[in-house]
Length: 315
Image (cartoon, rainbow, N blue to C red):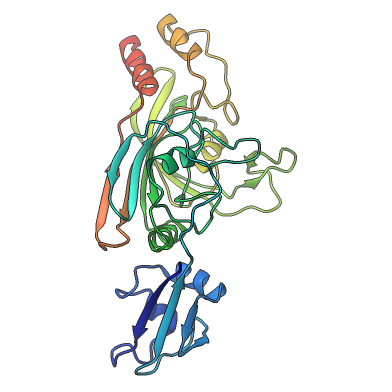
């Protein structure tokens, strides 16, 4: 069943644009979310479909029809979840390495979505193939990820990510000695020859910006904190590779041989590393229902902690 919200315009709302009015305190959805609802014909004023720029009049009746939250086609699958926070609107969790966020080509099970559906059947289904999912982490990237439990929360969170109003902080171990702090402002897109890869060699690129600062330098590597200002696919990994400081363990964008001068404990540890040493540490967002800023963090995964400890002991 669809969830319909009804608003009657008061004197304070008269003469405002429809999208501005709805994106205010009355309805916790961003203007981009409102735009999507308008494009889908889910917003009417006085029983007629309206445009974003419609100027409201006193006593106008606005009806917003949210997409129905029906069971998606993905099958539930019992798997452990490291949940940081949960309420009726959102779930925030610490995603482990090796777990894909949602089903894709050739992968129908063993994903975070399968695990979420086993944990709860109350998830947004604006995209039924990816219930609850408003943003992603790469399969082998660990860390903090937010999930929407209803469609209103989904629209709010996806709008925040699209408008880059969330706070996101990553930690990465990269090859070499990095000068910092700094910023990488480099457009990226699908590679010209390898379509599964993201690259700076592309016909259709989009601006991507990543800020970084040095947390600690080691003889072979640097520990960085990174803050992506845009949300492009593989952005951090591609940006770091572009400045010749790829993420340690990155099998796609920065595969490197261990330098011969590396201490044996470090060499032995690196042989065990099969994924990029990248962790989404902190996520800050406005709670869709409460309207307050909330910030969540997850600890470094054990493989990163062990590698850092080995580097410190080898110094």
